[in-house]
Length: 337
Image (cartoon, one colour):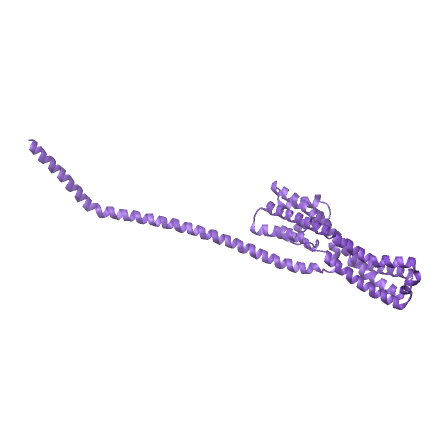
């Protein structure tokens, strides 16, 4: 009985094993194909992931290159426009110089004032004992030279006042932008609250916006009425930020720091050149002091210079050479930053 059960058990085990091997043999190809399909799907998924990663990387590189090209093109365009504007601003027409000086004078009235100034200077020369040739020279100098010198003086003084207050205005704009105020509102704030001439320049920007210009274009026109590199820097920063984006408050803060450093450098150079300026003043005043002392001690010795034609010729040549020396010394002492 036990032998029969053992034979049956062995038969069942062998039959089960045979059925299992048979089933494995039948489904082996299916299992292998499913494994291959699974591996292929994994490969395809990894390939898709790698392609997506590579595409994203290429897109990022292309976007960075596109932004660099945009910034480069913007800088190149701004440089060309700034070069043309600088060429025009180095020797602007008289009408633009009057506008840059902050003078509300028409050209017709300016010519009338120039003619009146020339007549007054010529009359003063005649009353001082000069001849008709001296009076004619005084007329030309008073009509053509003195009014234009006054315009240049007012223009330089206005630029100096603008540079003294412009960094403070930029700091106000930076704080306004950091607090969440739009840039247009910050510009209007400067146009209404800052001292002159910063207020008038920003008011022109606001008026240009009201006429339809965008803020970057309106700011780029500021050097037309304020001929200084600092105004051009401000326009370039706003233009680049509007096209390429970025942190505006940080850019304006850096610009304000640069302007203050330029101001410190100018003050340092001025302090270092004071000795040379004092020497130039002494050298320039020395001929007049010596002539006055000689006149006080020996009038007859020096009077031929003022009464004889040869003396007049000597004085004329001396004035020309002295003017050339003063001009050279002035160029040696003045530095542009």
